[in-house]
Amino acid sequence: MSGCSVSPVAALSAQAEFNWLQTIVDNLIDGVLIVTMDGEWVYGNYIAHRICQQLNLGTLVSEVIPPSIWQVCQILLERDRSGCEHPVVIESEISLEHLAQYRVRVCWLQMEDAQRPYLLVTLEDRHKTASSRAISEVRQYGLTARQSDVWMLYRTGHTYREIATELFVTVNTVKRHMKDIHAKQKLIAAEHTNFRF
Image (cartoon, rainbow, N blue to C red; front, side, top):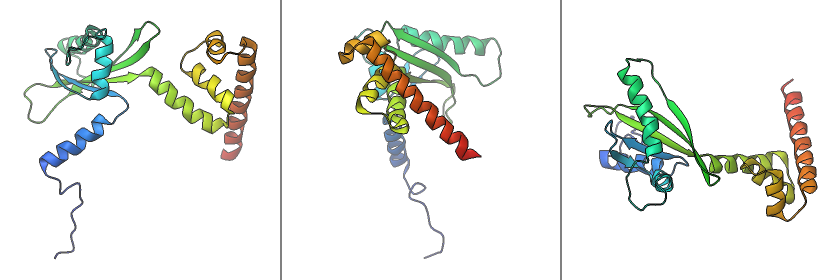
């Protein structure tokens, strides 16, 4: 046996490697969608399916690109036709009233064996991103349980009045909690500043 070892990833067969990569993409927090230049659905992970279904107003037709996403794709296609050679990522926001807000990013995806490039669309659920950030901040700032409740709602776009209604407290109570949270933020920021020097 030679002294050269092969990493487990390098030893994967093509099918196993594909399955491995697909598992990674399927477990991303963002939706991933691959689309042809003609607007045909090539691939979408679970999150992309869910978001597209919401944007298609709940219709159960799968693998249909919502018009709001296709409009963003068309901007990239038009830039390409105009001769722009710089790598470009087109970004847009799509809102469904107060139900959901998505960030859409579209860029070119060139596959080795493809004659034409595809469009790679990533779909970020802004509410989910804000919730994840708020969870991290709750721990970072050392918030109490009630402050955590207030902060989670605040970070996901609720007004003070909406927070008060949701938590069955007064608006002044929400303001007091927010004042305490901001004080903890400043304290943490000051500690980080002092730690650097």
